[in-house]
Length: 284
Image 1 (cartoon, helix red, strand yellow):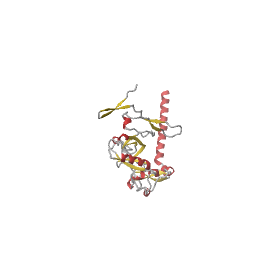
Image 2: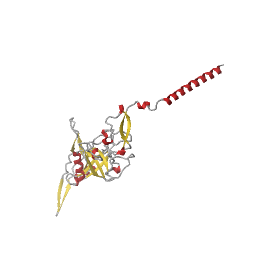
Image 3: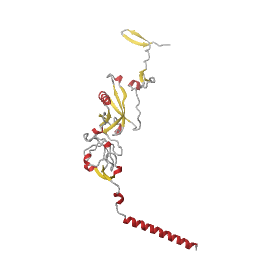
Image 4: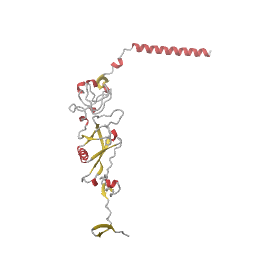
């Protein structure tokens, strides 16, 4: 008797489930197609038809119109191709990403490197080789310190190496203004740095009157250490070291002082015939 009840309950459950499934299927089949979609108003928004790199000049084939819910259209999005064609990108745009004003240069700025340069800054190119360019790892978007080596008096003894700029953005390596996806090193003879006019003067003087070296930085490192520079005599341990003197609590940068040279030892002049010599007098 109990087994018969189980079969009856199971049969009723299967029948009810089948009836519900059939009713749902019939409803979906008879419902007007596109009724839900048609009830949501949309607007045409232009998106990128493919991945586009910084500096690219937009063409008709770079654009694709999609229907976007009108109440969710990104602020500043474009709907007319004539508002975009010919404008340059100052930031990369991925495929299917809407074009926004923040990633576009003005219509008068054109494309390429110039519109990427912020107002008040300058793009300065310097010659590099495998050593100066850190074996090809100085790529667009990386940051470097600039070390200058020169003599202010043209005397070899006064040659000094010093960090003259810190945390400088690399705009271009050769003619490339965008890294490839794998960030592979590239060998170039010129890199372009983003500097202000005063920094441009420093780099130009250092590269003209002496030599410069680029030191690659970690992009997350924002420090700007103050160095006193180094001369050959100090490097070899034969000169007076440069001491760093902390200033009072004025918020100014530390100043540098050169330690006084030791007093010369007493000497006597010895004359033997036509020869003269200097001998140090031993002190007890």
